[in-house]
Amino acid sequence: MYKGGDIMIKIAIIGGTGLYDPRILDNVRDGTVVTPYGEVTYKVGEFSGQAVAFIPRHGSAHSIPPHLINYRANIWALKKLGVTNVIASTAVGSLNPKMGGGDFVLVDQFLDFTKSRVATFYDGGDRGVVHVDVTQPYCSNLRAILLNAAQEIGIPIHASGTYVCTEGPRFETPAEIKAYAKLGGDLVGMTNVPEVVLAREAEMCYVTVSMVTNFAAGISPHPLTHGEVLETMAANTEKIKRLIMAAIAKIDTKEDCACRHALAEYGGFKL
Ligand SMILES: [Zn+2]
Image (cartoon, rainbow, N blue to C red; front, side, top):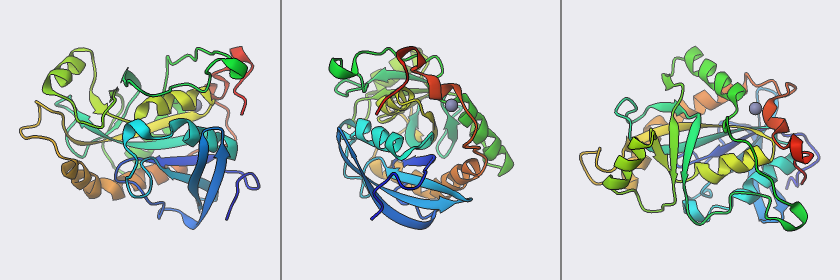
Protein backbone atom coordinates (compact mmCIF):
# COMPACT_ATOMS: atom_id res chain seq x y z
CA MET A 1 0.00 0.00 0.00
CA TYR A 2 1.23 3.47 -0.90
CA LYS A 3 2.08 5.38 2.28
CA GLY A 4 2.50 8.86 0.91
CA GLY A 5 5.57 10.98 0.62
CA ASP A 6 7.61 9.04 -1.94
CA ILE A 7 5.90 10.35 -5.06
CA MET A 8 4.75 13.88 -5.68
CA ILE A 9 1.00 14.32 -5.95
CA LYS A 10 0.11 17.88 -6.86
CA ILE A 11 -3.54 17.52 -7.83
CA ALA A 12 -6.47 16.08 -5.91
CA ILE A 13 -10.16 15.52 -6.51
CA ILE A 14 -12.60 15.53 -3.60
CA GLY A 15 -15.65 13.68 -4.87
CA GLY A 16 -19.01 14.77 -3.50
CA THR A 17 -22.37 13.01 -3.59
CA GLY A 18 -22.57 10.83 -6.69
CA LEU A 19 -18.83 10.90 -7.40
CA TYR A 20 -17.38 8.07 -5.35
CA ASP A 21 -14.96 6.25 -7.59
CA PRO A 22 -11.78 7.36 -9.33
CA ARG A 23 -12.28 5.16 -12.39
CA ILE A 24 -11.33 8.19 -14.44
CA LEU A 25 -7.73 7.56 -13.34
CA ASP A 26 -5.28 4.91 -14.55
CA ASN A 27 -3.23 2.58 -12.39
CA VAL A 28 -5.23 3.35 -9.22
CA ARG A 29 -3.74 2.36 -5.87
CA ASP A 30 -4.92 2.82 -2.27
CA GLY A 31 -3.03 4.98 0.16
CA THR A 32 -3.29 6.19 3.74
CA VAL A 33 -2.07 9.32 5.44
CA VAL A 34 -1.82 9.80 9.19
CA THR A 35 -2.95 13.26 10.34
CA PRO A 36 -3.43 14.82 13.80
CA TYR A 37 -7.19 14.38 13.16
CA GLY A 38 -7.11 10.72 12.24
CA GLU A 39 -6.07 8.49 9.36
CA VAL A 40 -7.28 9.26 5.86
CA THR A 41 -7.56 6.65 3.13
CA TYR A 42 -7.46 7.82 -0.43
CA LYS A 43 -6.86 6.56 -3.93
CA VAL A 44 -4.10 7.73 -6.19
CA GLY A 45 -3.93 7.21 -9.91
CA GLU A 46 -2.55 8.78 -13.03
CA PHE A 47 -4.05 11.06 -15.60
CA SER A 48 -2.38 13.05 -18.34
CA GLY A 49 1.08 12.28 -16.90
CA GLN A 50 0.14 13.55 -13.43
CA ALA A 51 -0.42 11.68 -10.17
CA VAL A 52 -3.91 12.59 -8.95
CA ALA A 53 -5.29 11.79 -5.49
CA PHE A 54 -8.97 11.09 -4.93
CA ILE A 55 -10.99 11.28 -1.70
CA PRO A 56 -14.72 10.51 -1.67
CA ARG A 57 -15.97 13.11 0.82
CA HIS A 58 -18.79 10.98 2.23
CA GLY A 59 -16.77 7.74 2.19
CA SER A 60 -16.93 5.27 -0.66
CA ALA A 61 -20.46 4.14 0.30
CA HIS A 62 -21.90 7.57 1.24
CA SER A 63 -21.76 6.57 4.91
CA ILE A 64 -20.56 9.87 6.45
CA PRO A 65 -23.16 12.65 6.85
CA PRO A 66 -22.09 16.23 6.04
CA HIS A 67 -21.78 17.37 9.68
CA LEU A 68 -19.50 14.44 10.60
CA ILE A 69 -17.07 14.57 7.68
CA ASN A 70 -13.52 14.87 8.96
CA TYR A 71 -12.80 17.96 6.89
CA ARG A 72 -9.60 18.81 8.73
CA ALA A 73 -8.15 15.31 8.27
CA ASN A 74 -8.98 15.30 4.54
CA ILE A 75 -7.36 18.66 3.82
CA TRP A 76 -4.37 17.97 6.09
CA ALA A 77 -3.82 14.64 4.31
CA LEU A 78 -3.84 16.29 0.88
CA LYS A 79 -1.43 18.95 2.07
CA LYS A 80 0.88 16.29 3.51
CA LEU A 81 0.86 14.48 0.15
CA GLY A 82 2.12 17.68 -1.46
CA VAL A 83 -1.13 18.59 -3.21
CA THR A 84 -1.32 22.20 -4.40
CA ASN A 85 -4.53 22.08 -6.48
CA VAL A 86 -7.85 20.68 -5.30
CA ILE A 87 -10.93 20.28 -7.48
CA ALA A 88 -14.00 19.33 -5.45
CA SER A 89 -17.45 18.39 -6.64
CA THR A 90 -20.56 19.40 -4.71
CA ALA A 91 -24.19 18.46 -5.24
CA VAL A 92 -26.45 21.45 -4.54
CA GLY A 93 -30.04 22.56 -4.50
CA SER A 94 -30.87 25.76 -6.34
CA LEU A 95 -32.62 28.92 -5.14
CA ASN A 96 -31.94 30.67 -8.42
CA PRO A 97 -34.52 30.06 -11.16
CA LYS A 98 -31.73 30.51 -13.75
CA MET A 99 -29.82 27.53 -12.31
CA GLY A 100 -31.87 24.40 -12.93
CA GLY A 101 -31.41 20.66 -12.45
CA GLY A 102 -28.30 19.31 -14.17
CA ASP A 103 -26.65 22.75 -14.42
CA PHE A 104 -23.00 23.25 -13.41
CA VAL A 105 -21.97 26.30 -11.41
CA LEU A 106 -18.50 27.60 -10.54
CA VAL A 107 -19.29 29.22 -7.23
CA ASP A 108 -17.18 32.21 -6.26
CA GLN A 109 -18.62 33.12 -2.84
CA PHE A 110 -20.21 31.38 0.13
CA LEU A 111 -22.53 32.13 3.03
CA ASP A 112 -21.82 29.99 6.10
CA PHE A 113 -24.80 28.74 8.12
CA THR A 114 -23.08 25.70 9.62
CA LYS A 115 -23.33 25.21 13.39
CA SER A 116 -21.21 22.41 14.81
CA ARG A 117 -18.05 22.25 12.72
CA VAL A 118 -14.49 23.22 13.44
CA ALA A 119 -13.54 25.50 10.58
CA THR A 120 -9.86 26.12 11.30
CA PHE A 121 -6.53 24.37 11.84
CA TYR A 122 -5.69 27.13 14.32
CA ASP A 123 -7.27 26.39 17.68
CA GLY A 124 -4.87 28.52 19.69
CA GLY A 125 -2.23 26.75 21.79
CA ASP A 126 0.87 25.70 19.85
CA ARG A 127 -0.70 26.47 16.48
CA GLY A 128 -1.81 29.94 17.51
CA VAL A 129 -4.60 31.98 15.97
CA VAL A 130 -4.97 33.10 12.36
CA HIS A 131 -7.61 35.07 10.51
CA VAL A 132 -7.34 33.97 6.91
CA ASP A 133 -8.52 36.32 4.15
CA VAL A 134 -11.42 34.93 2.12
CA THR A 135 -12.05 37.83 -0.24
CA GLN A 136 -11.63 35.20 -2.95
CA PRO A 137 -12.40 31.92 -1.19
CA TYR A 138 -12.14 29.93 -4.43
CA CYS A 139 -8.96 30.03 -6.54
CA SER A 140 -9.51 32.41 -9.44
CA ASN A 141 -6.91 30.59 -11.58
CA LEU A 142 -8.59 27.20 -11.13
CA ARG A 143 -12.00 28.77 -11.76
CA ALA A 144 -10.68 30.20 -15.05
CA ILE A 145 -9.23 26.80 -16.00
CA LEU A 146 -12.56 25.06 -15.31
CA LEU A 147 -14.48 27.69 -17.23
CA ASN A 148 -12.17 27.27 -20.26
CA ALA A 149 -12.35 23.50 -20.02
CA ALA A 150 -16.15 23.58 -19.90
CA GLN A 151 -16.31 25.88 -22.93
CA GLU A 152 -13.85 23.72 -24.88
CA ILE A 153 -15.75 20.48 -24.34
CA GLY A 154 -19.13 22.16 -24.79
CA ILE A 155 -20.53 21.82 -21.27
CA PRO A 156 -22.66 24.85 -20.29
CA ILE A 157 -21.60 26.28 -16.94
CA HIS A 158 -22.57 29.29 -14.81
CA ALA A 159 -19.40 31.32 -14.24
CA SER A 160 -20.28 32.47 -10.72
CA GLY A 161 -22.68 31.92 -7.85
CA THR A 162 -23.03 32.10 -4.08
CA TYR A 163 -23.07 28.80 -2.18
CA VAL A 164 -25.08 28.75 1.03
CA CYS A 165 -23.71 26.08 3.38
CA THR A 166 -26.22 24.64 5.83
CA GLU A 167 -25.59 22.24 8.69
CA GLY A 168 -27.86 19.42 7.48
CA PRO A 169 -28.30 16.56 7.32
CA ARG A 170 -31.94 17.61 6.97
CA PHE A 171 -32.94 19.63 3.95
CA GLU A 172 -33.93 23.28 4.46
CA THR A 173 -37.38 24.71 5.18
CA PRO A 174 -39.04 26.91 2.55
CA ALA A 175 -38.69 29.83 5.02
CA GLU A 176 -34.93 29.28 5.24
CA ILE A 177 -34.65 29.07 1.46
CA LYS A 178 -36.60 32.33 1.09
CA ALA A 179 -34.24 33.99 3.59
CA TYR A 180 -31.09 32.67 1.87
CA ALA A 181 -32.35 33.94 -1.49
CA LYS A 182 -32.92 37.40 0.03
CA LEU A 183 -29.34 37.34 1.34
CA GLY A 184 -27.96 36.73 -2.14
CA GLY A 185 -27.58 32.94 -2.13
CA ASP A 186 -27.92 31.01 -5.39
CA LEU A 187 -27.26 27.45 -4.28
CA VAL A 188 -27.59 25.48 -1.09
CA GLY A 189 -25.42 22.58 0.04
CA MET A 190 -24.06 21.02 3.22
CA THR A 191 -20.35 20.43 2.67
CA ASN A 192 -18.41 23.28 1.12
CA VAL A 193 -17.77 25.01 4.44
CA PRO A 194 -15.40 24.38 6.14
CA GLU A 195 -13.70 22.46 3.30
CA VAL A 196 -12.94 25.57 1.24
CA VAL A 197 -11.78 27.51 4.31
CA LEU A 198 -9.42 24.77 5.47
CA ALA A 199 -7.93 24.47 1.98
CA ARG A 200 -7.34 28.21 2.05
CA GLU A 201 -5.64 28.00 5.46
CA ALA A 202 -3.52 25.16 4.10
CA GLU A 203 -2.50 27.45 1.24
CA MET A 204 -3.84 25.24 -1.53
CA CYS A 205 -5.67 26.33 -4.67
CA TYR A 206 -9.23 25.08 -4.25
CA VAL A 207 -12.25 25.17 -6.49
CA THR A 208 -15.59 23.44 -6.46
CA VAL A 209 -17.83 22.50 -9.35
CA SER A 210 -21.39 22.55 -8.05
CA MET A 211 -23.99 20.44 -9.76
CA VAL A 212 -27.61 21.42 -9.32
CA THR A 213 -29.63 18.32 -8.48
CA ASN A 214 -32.97 19.95 -7.71
CA PHE A 215 -34.74 23.19 -6.87
CA ALA A 216 -34.73 23.89 -3.11
CA ALA A 217 -37.69 23.53 -0.74
CA GLY A 218 -40.59 25.82 -1.53
CA ILE A 219 -39.30 26.34 -5.08
CA SER A 220 -39.49 22.69 -6.06
CA PRO A 221 -43.10 21.65 -6.72
CA HIS A 222 -42.70 18.53 -4.54
CA PRO A 223 -41.03 17.46 -1.25
CA LEU A 224 -37.28 16.82 -1.57
CA THR A 225 -35.79 13.35 -1.58
CA HIS A 226 -32.18 12.16 -1.54
CA GLY A 227 -33.25 9.79 -4.32
CA GLU A 228 -33.91 12.77 -6.59
CA VAL A 229 -30.43 14.12 -5.78
CA LEU A 230 -28.82 10.77 -6.64
CA GLU A 231 -30.85 10.41 -9.82
CA THR A 232 -29.77 13.80 -11.21
CA MET A 233 -26.18 13.14 -10.15
CA ALA A 234 -26.18 9.74 -11.84
CA ALA A 235 -27.48 11.28 -15.06
CA ASN A 236 -24.65 13.83 -15.01
CA THR A 237 -21.72 11.98 -13.44
CA GLU A 238 -20.05 11.32 -16.78
CA LYS A 239 -20.26 15.02 -17.64
CA ILE A 240 -18.74 16.14 -14.34
CA LYS A 241 -15.93 13.60 -14.72
CA ARG A 242 -15.21 14.80 -18.25
CA LEU A 243 -15.15 18.39 -17.05
CA ILE A 244 -12.81 17.70 -14.12
CA MET A 245 -10.42 15.69 -16.27
CA ALA A 246 -10.38 18.34 -19.02
CA ALA A 247 -9.51 20.88 -16.33
CA ILE A 248 -6.76 18.72 -14.82
CA ALA A 249 -5.13 18.41 -18.24
CA LYS A 250 -4.83 22.22 -18.25
CA ILE A 251 -3.30 22.68 -14.79
CA ASP A 252 0.33 23.75 -14.83
CA THR A 253 1.55 22.50 -11.45
CA LYS A 254 4.73 24.56 -11.72
CA GLU A 255 2.79 27.83 -11.71
CA ASP A 256 2.55 29.78 -8.45
CA CYS A 257 -0.71 31.31 -7.20
CA ALA A 258 -1.75 33.80 -4.52
CA CYS A 259 -3.61 30.99 -2.71
CA ARG A 260 -0.25 29.38 -1.83
CA HIS A 261 0.62 32.45 0.23
CA ALA A 262 -2.69 32.97 2.03
CA LEU A 263 -0.98 32.79 5.43
CA ALA A 264 2.19 34.69 4.49
CA GLU A 265 1.42 37.22 7.22
CA TYR A 266 1.70 34.37 9.74
CA GLY A 267 4.82 32.80 8.28
CA GLY A 268 2.90 30.34 6.08
CA PHE A 269 0.98 27.14 6.84
CA LYS A 270 2.96 24.47 8.68
CA LEU A 271 2.04 20.79 8.93
ZN1 LIG B 1 -4.94 29.56 -6.47
